[in-house]
Amino acid sequence: MAGVGLWFLAVALVTAAGWLLTRRGNFTQTLRALGFAQSLYFLSIFALYRPAASIVQTALFALGFLAVWMGAATAHKVTGWRTLLLPVVVILIFVVGSAIANILLAGAQFTFESLLMEFGVP
Image 1 (cartoon, rainbow, N blue to C red):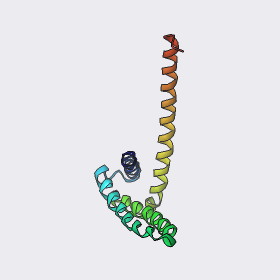
Image 2: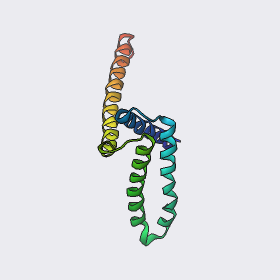
Image 3: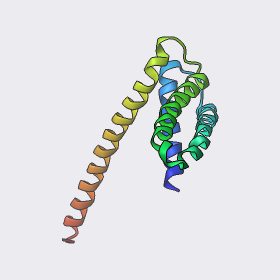
Image 4: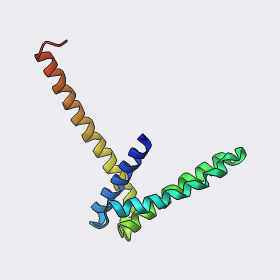
């Protein structure tokens, strides 16, 4: 269940990156494009053949990355040099968002501990 939530979070990150680059597209279009791009992983059935498992998994990872990249570019109508920036912007949004979330959680933890000390709870 957590995997589904993380996948929706990834779609939201890609949507934010596409919107920052083009001001076009929305979550639904991105969800549809990335969902179709994920259909590539049905080919992972070939990884059951042990001698080819690592090759298949590596190829699926690379092709999956390219499919998501092309799907996001299509959903947001990204063209030209901005297409090359799309994965970079996704990574930047992830890093900055994670840093902001950590700062906010640290502040909430400090506040909660201060309140507990104020009420005399060790």
